[in-house]
Length: 296
Length: 238
Ligand SMILES: Nc1ncnc2c1ncn2[C@@H]1O[C@H](COP(=O)(O)OP(=O)(O)OP(=O)(O)O)[C@@H](O)[C@H]1O
Ligand SMILES: [Mg+2]
Image 1 (cartoon, rainbow over the protein chains, first blue to last red):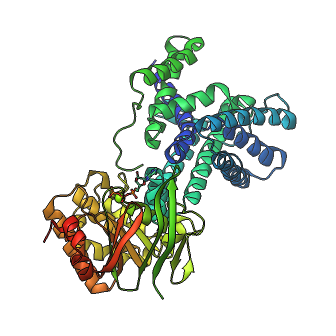
Image 2: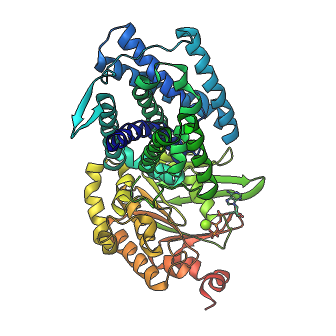
C-alpha cells in the first residue's frame, strides 16, 4: 500500500514535471511577447520524431541524435519568429492573428507527420531504460525511465537558471521581458532576446517530447490534444509568468492524475485534471504557484 | 562640428503635430537645457533622438556629423547616445546590480566594472541595496539607478528627461548636486529636460525654450535669464 503510494508519487511527479516543461514553452513566449503559441505542443512531437529518425532510422547514437534533434528544433524556433511572428506583427496583426496562425500550424505539423511517417505510433528506443529496468531504493522499485526523466529535467532547470541569472544575455532577456523600450535604450537588441525566447520555448518542449515518447510512443498524441492542454494547465498554475512555478504546477498535475487513477478511476483522470485547470482559471487566474518572485 | 545636432525634426501623433522643425545643437562638453511647459514636446524630442519615435521625412539627427535618424534605438545607444527616460523605467524585477549590468551592453561587462563601482561611489544608497529588486526602491533611488545605468554605459552624450519628476526637494537637490559634480569631473556632454529651471540652469551652458512643438528661444543661460517673458514664466518674475 505504502509502496503503491510512493511509486505513484515517483512516476506522477516525473511525468508531471514533463508537463511542466511543455508549460515552460508557453511561459517563455508569454513573458517576452505576450503571445500564446497554440502550436506549442507541436515541438514535442517534432522532437520525438526527429530523435526517432536520427536514432532508430539513421543509427547515430544517443548523444548525436539528441543534440541534432535539439539543434533542428532550435532552428525551428527561430523560424517561428522570422516567418510567423514578425510578418504578422509588421502587418499590424495582434494576439488573435497569432493564435489563428499557430492553430493552423499545429494542424499542419500533425498532417505533415502523417504524410512523412504514417499515422501509426512507432516504438521509442529504450534510451532512458527499458520497461523492466528499475532501481531499488529502500524497498521501492523506481523505474529507471522516471529517474532519467528527473535527471534530464534537473539538468535543464539548472541550465535555464544559469542562463537567465548568470549571463548577460539572460539578464537582457529578463530586462526585455519587463520593459522592451527601456531594454532597447540599454543597447539590447530585442530581436535577439525575442529569438532567444522562441528558441528556449521550442527547445524545452522538444526535450519534453523526447522524454514523453517512451510513455506515449512516437505518436501523434505528442502533437496535440491532452498533453498540450496539460502543459498549458501547468503554465496557468504558474500564472503564465513563473518558470519554476510552472514546473511545480506540472508536478502537482501529474500527482493529481496518478492518484485519481489509483483511488478513483483512470476514466476520470483527465476530467479531474481539467476541472482543476478550470477551477484555477475561475478562482485564482493569477496562478497558484506564482509567488512574488525574486528572480525569474 | 557639433557632437549632436538635430535638423528640422518634425513629427505628428495621429496627424496632430507634436514637433515642428526643431533644430538643436550640442558641442562636446556642453550642458544644454531644454525647458518648456507640459506637452511642449520635450520628451518627444529625446525619443526621436534615441530612435524610440520615428520622425517625418526631412528630419535629421546627426552624431559627429553622421546621420543616425534611420537607426533603431539599440544601435543609437550603442553609438553612445544614452537616453535616461522620463519616469526612470528601471527593470522592476531585476536587482540593482543587474539593472546596472544590462546597461553595460554597449561597452561590455568587463569594461563596465569600474563604471559600476563609480555609480556605487556616487550613490551609496544603491550600493547597500545591490541585491534588492529595483521595483522595490524608492522613487529617488530609482532615479539614481536610472542615471547610474546611463553612467555605466560610458555615454558620448547623456540625455536626461525630468529627473526631478515626483521627488521630494531634498532628494532632487542631492541628485542634481551629484550630477553637477560628475559632469564637472568628467566633462560629460548632457542634454537635460527639466520643467524646473532653477534646478537645471545653474549647471547648464545653453538653453532652448520649447513650446507647442517649436523652439521659441535659444541662448546662453544669462541671455535667457535676462529675457523678460522667460523670467516671468520660469522664475516667478524678477
Ligand atoms: N504616443 C503618443 N501618442 C499620441 N500623442 C502623443 C504621444 N506622445 C506624446 N503625445 C503628444 O505630443 C505632445 C508632446 O508630448 P511630450 O510628451 O513630448 O511633451 P513633454 O514636453 O515631454 O511634456 P511633459 O513636460 O508633460 O513631460 C503632447 O501633446 C502629447 O499629448
Ligand atoms: Mg515629458
